[in-house]
Length: 177
Image 1 (tube, rainbow, N blue to C red):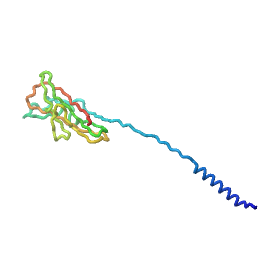
Image 2 (image 1 turned 45 degrees about the vertical axis):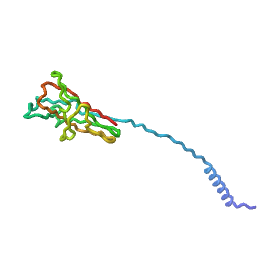
Image 3 (image 1 turned 90 degrees about the horizontal axis):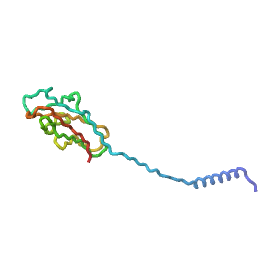
Image 4 (image 1 turned 120 degrees about the vertical axis):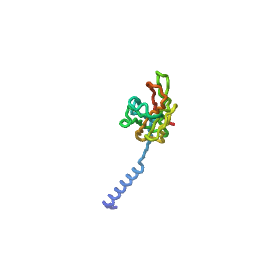
């Protein structure tokens, strides 16, 4: 039997291709999984631009021509330094509550009720504070950015207040449901 060299080479190449194919089909694959998790904490941030508000009626027109009279703060001056508060939260339901219990005059032992201090977010609509706090802003959903709100305050004087120095505080709280 005579061998044809080209045919022999062809058979050899075919055998090698078949062997390589068998190796490839016999190759084993393996997979693995890695668990991925993230923990995002609840976040709530509230900052206030000013640490005090002063109503100096001696620097204003007092007594006024008629009562009730409304006075804007003398420090900080509301036109140049409006009081602001800034909120950031990733909570779905939140509110900024401001509590004001009134202004206390220690010398006379008298309190101006909380309703004599009023607030506005737009400078047009004024609402009185009340004991127990008022929701000045109610949010639905995360803020996604630091949101800043202007809060104007004014003091209502009805003419029956004893003279003296009065002190009190506004307490801002960012709450969630």
